[in-house]
Image (cartoon, rainbow, N blue to C red; front, side):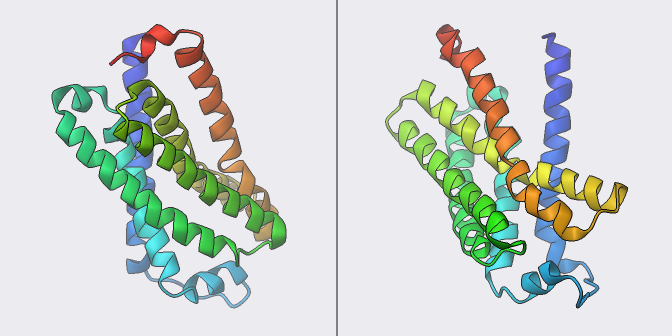
Length: 210
């Protein structure tokens, strides 16, 4: 793939990541029109500290991903890369734990609960594996696991796109859109990530060197 196309894709991703992160961290600063017929919104407003923690921490994790992926930053300063990585791990820890607790009461029944709960558990697990291999200085395995973690972090982007298309464009009922999104916002991301890992790291292991 030509280098300019790679840069273009990366810039689009960075804009999407920062944009969704900005929406998440400013959500509670925006006026909210309470709709008693929207069970999701009512649960959100009555969730106490869990929802703000999830929004702020997950938003920060998402905003950090372009800089964590940046090869220029990594080559320029290992300490900056490690600092960003540590902030990312802490953000995922807070966002994942709060997300798991929120999933236990997710709107949409057991299908949505299991979907979002699985996302939280796998997100925490892949990030923990990436952090472990970084501590072990096993860079090749660290990169593989951090790609998986970031694929799950970007569920925030795919979720927003799917909600916008389903609710805004097609005007489908909320639960018709929301329940399948509990799985569709992250499973395709992880499948694509596994394809990418197989293509870049497994079939061509010489590319894992920094």
